[in-house]
Length: 246
Ligand code: UGA
Ligand code: MN
Image (cartoon, rainbow, N blue to C red):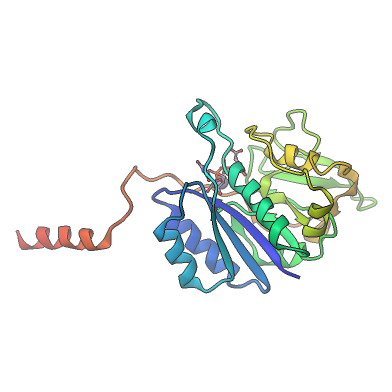
């Protein structure tokens, strides 16, 4: 069955670097379809070109963050419109398989994609570097190997205090939960989505990454560069040429 990797992305100087790295990771994964969803009204040329160039099976979609949230001060519900668009696409186009919300800037060990293929309903595993705690993960008993709770630097009253990069869901289960979706509430996106899969309880999660003993994905963040227009190599070369001539 296909593994659907649902990736929100948005225009910024680092975008092509992030997507290149992620594309080259996914080239090492069999039977994968990359659902790339831009935070934009229309698909952009750079992203379209990049997706064509790598030859991965992909869908290029768009879903802009609603104005009301974009204009608000403080934390924004990043990638929510796109992940919900991804769910809509899956409901319309996929029958079986597994999907994973994979942000464009994280670092993925390719073995995590193999691990999550066998997800029957919802699987979870550790995510490195995502909080001050250094790790967000289901906790397993060393005595029994059974799930006993969650560890995260911030619990915040969440039923599922997990990172976006730390869970996958089967497409069949999504079809059984036609109302499931992600809320526009910063910090509570994962919890809100997982709660919307009710009836579903934390104790029912399938543990991956050798029973949650390995870190196979890291919530890395790329340092933002100085704001700059999209790189135009033709112009850039002309400028350099002008410098050389003088
Ligand atoms: C954390 C979580 O891991 C995200 O899944 C969550 O959406 C986000 O916080 C949040 O709740 O605000 P973080 O690394 O802080 O992630 O956020 P980003 O990586 O900047 O954004 C998450 C995803 O949304 C990325 O794939 C990014 O490309 C995309 N994004 C970000 C947009 O599409 N539009 C934006 O304006 C910003
Ligand atoms: Mn990120």
